[in-house]
Image 1 (cartoon, rainbow, N blue to C red):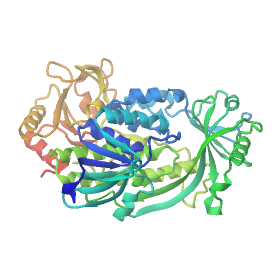
Image 2: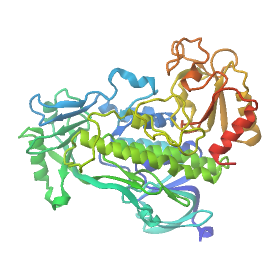
Image 3: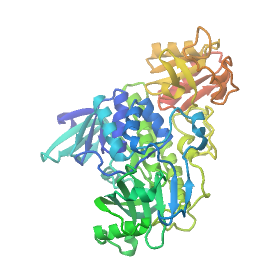
Image 4: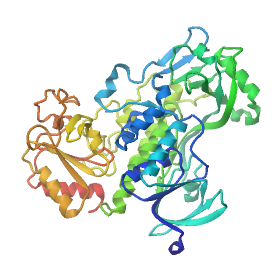
Length: 559
């Protein structure tokens, strides 16, 4: 069957929303040819999924799209925090949190920050960049069926506009086809978790007078908790375009047909407390919040990513961010296997790494909904968390105790209690500002197209030379940087910031990079293309080339 396929690509992506587009972007950056099919005619038209966390922004920064995303997000650049109040009238209520990064402490950990960019604004940016990188993105094209064998997957796709069918032969398929994933169903993969949590009807509307009631309160979201009508209000432009989430209770027999425009208008007026508010409804869509995680992330050559792999409560914007990070984790592994630098076993680490992260993150998302008393959510007994608990450890400090890492503690927590990014294998590598031939850069900017070895510019342990020999002789995609001062340095400390990532400070402190990464000036740190530490050596080795080659073989599954 596959010998007669109409198209042949290394990777077929099913689904063209945030996660599918991110997968296309990341594969394109790595030079992997692919095709994406999406049943809808274009990108999202509804302003949802707006919170892009700092880890996601790190990935999009390295992928070169951060400036365009910030431009698309400019209308909400000054919106911060979540407000909880009975109505918008008067001064009642409280901020659940006023600023997402109070005091600017996040700069110690990352070169970027959170960004409030709605899905309908973000997707076109990803789409444009993915196409510029050569991605073949086909909207109004729907996967109808697929069969896989030992060598690949053959998919039958329908062009919904032309009502024509064609076949695509791919080495691998990535299913980013949403929470009701037909691909997951066809694979027979079950889901685990509490299931449905609550349901909302999301309304987009225009109101010229609502801004007066909001005043100078520039929130990300406002939970309106009045006894007559509750819901969540989200600004689109802070002026006349808004989104309102009205609680919907299908478990009580309530139907979507009951949410007429007149009912929604009155609900919004009662919830905001502005009884004569002008409300021009421009659209509505229903959605259900759930906590479910697929029992497996792959069967053979077909992988799940995003909502097809996990569903999470929207509180905290964990779902889309976790999905984008799924795509990034899988993209470099697919690229490495396809170019022959890694063994097929590397792809097995996708499930081993990402599924535990989804389990921990989805639980935290539900707990966040409890903490925030999300309108319409009546949590079951036992579901909850510490009031106002932090989320940066979930967002940035999650770890891979098992997977494509050497030296991680397999019994360690996936999400630690605090934020310690000090170079432990399985954790996101530390951020430090450096200077190179192209100017100022973060250490995180080094990680995308290959594995990277960091060592000391003044060291005599031979790690840098070993890496160069391995890259040349074995063809392993491996880049080596010597950090510090002096003629041998590839990267030097940013003036006045040496030690900022946890070292003792002072631009002449040659071991600062090592201290930040938990090693010594005679040691080395191997970082994966996704910015996670794969392995580190505490000091020198009698045979650095053999030690490094052994670590690479374990990480890339080439042994």
